[in-house]
Image (cartoon, rainbow, N blue to C red; front, side, top):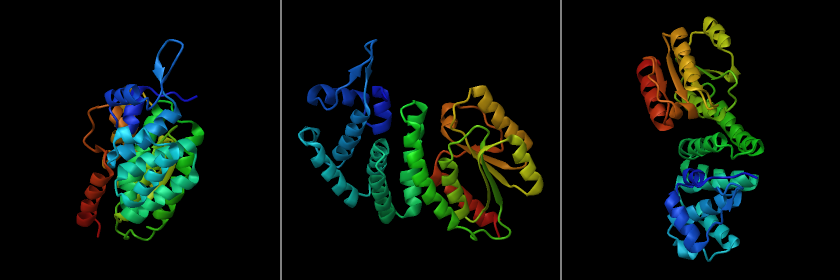
Length: 299
């Protein structure tokens, strides 16, 4: 059975651990169990309940009212909120619940509603990307099973590939080129696909190599094609030394290119970066930056 600490719940729901404890004691909102060594832990059901409570509470329902509702009433109110609210946090939390339950119909409904309200671009930037950052957290703490990750990855991947294909022909002949790839033994591709969509939409050419690309292959591609930018994502845990060594190797071999890096490990380690390496921490800011470059450089 998957087990969450109270800190995990805080990170995933945005509800402070202190508040969770108060709700737990005063309203018996959730009921933690204990390990054989007396350490408290929480279940999938506790996480789902807190996510639902978070949505209702943020949309004006008092906690004292929420605790009197049964599951059907909670789900009914959440459905109403999803149809009327533009709050991306609501959508993100509903996607997490749908993932935990492997509920494809709910996942598709939440996603489609978001696209209708926000448009595809804002859904990618404001809903999908933050959602997958939280999924990365779940994966890091070992509280997501492979089936759940594959479930959401495949649903989102299908939509992103369709959107990326829709940008074919968007780049001009003289456009600069991004080489996009994941390092060897890195398989978490969705972040790379998110950014590939933004880059192609901004008018750049993209050479997309995908998952687990050996370093030698990057060098071979650069010998055959003129590469202006590199973009990679690092999510799989590495030691700080291995992380720093890889970045410096990229910087040294591709010294005349700008290199963008995103992924969970960029938050984990605060190392001094070479001058040609940038961390892409925010899709909105990154999108604005490359649009400016496209206007001034791409003819």
